[in-house]
Image (cartoon, rainbow, N blue to C red; front, top):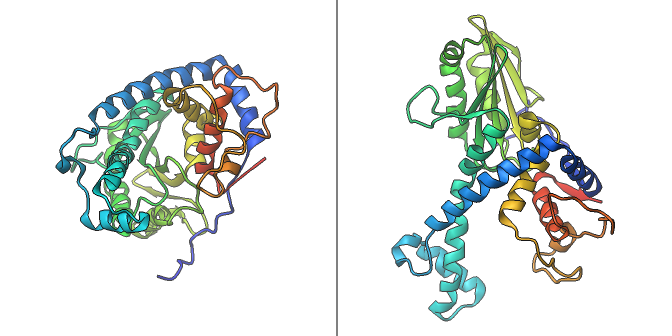
Length: 322
């Protein structure tokens, strides 16, 4: 399919380790930020523990794993397996990771939204609010968001459906909230604009095509658009990764959320040796702590958890540099 003429050409997103460390210090020094981190840590730990308890365990029946015979055999070929016991060792963690990926987005929404003054929207099917995950008020403006966990979750049909949800329901949203302005965000919990398959931008294009006569800001070359209809101003934007977190809670929101997750999930202890031979070619460079000063110290993360912060940060940029 040829590239749409209005599709923006995003620049690479770059994160700098020293800036991350400085930002972490700022979070660590701000009592309100610390309180948000600790509140989210508690919420994440509870959600994660409940979810882990519901995952298939090693004593589950084979049917619980929903495996594909094709995938099993292809994987066995790739690993040169000859014994069923060899592939059995891979099935459990693979299923657990798949199950976690399915539920992680909702888990994050339920923990994070209330901390930053938003509320979760019940996801009942076939209602004016089915496409929404969160909302909040800002004066007479209603802010609503539909979230996906990663930058390649959409296809053409889903982009069309989300555009229809905005066009068909904005009047109901405005009426229920007694608002004259609506900010709709399609938000992505991690990734960058360059990593996106650009179906998120096509939500904006579809909205523009459906409301062309009312459009005041078309999305050509942009990641946002606007139309006015019936006295209601509707702004729509695609916010991916860092853009979403900055919109939700400010410049340091991303660091607050990642710090809370790391505290909830990663026990302090020994980090890998600096020369550990990771199988993934560039993983050692990603998690390297050579840039961390010897006297660097924050209360929210232990030094052994800093590599995890860099690993998480790599999911939000195209290049991670010192």
